[in-house]
Length: 185
Length: 188
Image (cartoon, rainbow over all chains, first blue to last red; front, side, top):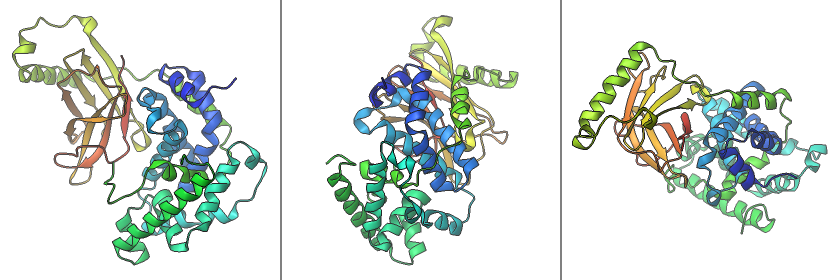
């Protein structure tokens, strides 16, 4: 019987290595997908995933379920590490990576039949519903690690415009994802 | 954390964006590599004599700084001194912080091989509670050899994690704005 995320987190904090294996089996694919989406480099993506899992392993006692799910913590961790690894790449390359058409290339496959496929589809659909300029701002921020002033410079618009685009985009995404049960209402 | 006005990102909707990444299976050997790395015991003190001497000097200085309370007490029994390591991540994977903790009194953290930071940046040490609240524990910059020592003049008993981030100098910031480059659990 698999443990809940909260039980896995408690077991991790207690130093139970089987919990780390369970965490990897549950979210290793998602973590690797996020790292690869950010970096487009399988070797560095593996490093980012390893760093993130070891960070969760070592820092599990600091996990607070009231502040987010174990999955969110892990995904945020792997994203942060992957974005750290983008340092040294040119702004142009980072922009191209963040905006490459990953969304449109996705087809439903066997892996999408696994648990979570509906959530993934909902998030992709939600992003697809956004106007281009809002989606671009979100992708640059999330997958490229760009700050809003940097996004304004890239887009050639005032910072206030970018702030507005981000706010509207996040509101729309929240509404869409709440309606589909991906995030809590 | 970033200024919420400047960077209105975070929360469950933001966190869900990672789900949009196209699903890709990781290479099968990655699982074993992670589990093997987790199974390795944390590196214990492998400090050169000079570093040990530096710790002793810093500890003595710290003792002087914290005043009569510590000076008037008998030396702590060895059972009250514990050692643990906080570990680097990402580009800091080869950097460790070796911590000597006199329970209830102070901790001395010794770093080696720290990368020199760009102008205006400092390393900032944090103590993080089980509720994930971060308290400042000092800012520091390494010497040209990459060595640094930090004395934390407080009990660690209410904290779960010790971490280091890179922040704006010279005084650091009141709460972390970056992901830790070095972190580790504080033993109970």
